[in-house]
Image (cartoon, rainbow over all chains, first blue to last red; front, top):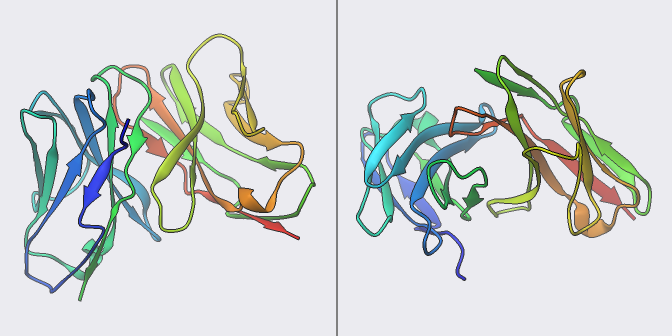
Amino acid sequence: KAGVTQTPRYLIKTRGQQVTLSCSPISGHRSVSWYQQTPGQGLQFLFEYFSETQRNKGNFPGRFSGRQFSNSRSEMNVSTLELGDSALYLCASSLGQDTYEQYFGPGTRLTVT
Amino acid sequence: AQSVTQLDSQVPVFEEAPVELRCNYSSSVSVYLFWYVQYPNQGLQLLLKYLSGSTLVESINGFEAEFNKSQTSFHLRKPSVHISDTAEYFCAVRGKSARQLTFGSGTQLTVLP
């Protein structure tokens, strides 16, 4: 079974631009979570989607948004990019909203210049 | 809310020596506990988990962790490490009523020849 895939793997953007990252969960998994990983703040939870609905949200500004499609694929969007948004963005999928194990993709490395 | 403390940011150890990576957590509710491993330029891989039952859990590659409720710890151990174990290790906790993971700051394990 294929794992979690994330596209693109690497991205360079300029301050003020917006960006969209994509995540395809493991086949059959219906819950997708997003995390931001930075050297300073570590791994921080962004949001979780299940059945196309945001179920949980971390402490991030409204510039960070996401959505989930009927096939469970998910996208996250960051508008008005700031230098501090440079990070590895990780997507994790799980079978259902009450499933304990989360399986992570390889991440998208976003660099904001 | 939960929090996780990984007491050592860097652990160098010689090949075939034993290692212990320490993890302490804080939570007002019952929790599930996880260890993830991250190799360079990759996402997180689930190493082992404690959900319930036996407090000693093992992974397929020789790591084990013991849940100690009184000390609120979930230390990771391996009796004999290999060069290939060099990676960053993250301890994570999830409250039983929550769906997101809270991660520690990570421990970089470097196995020296």
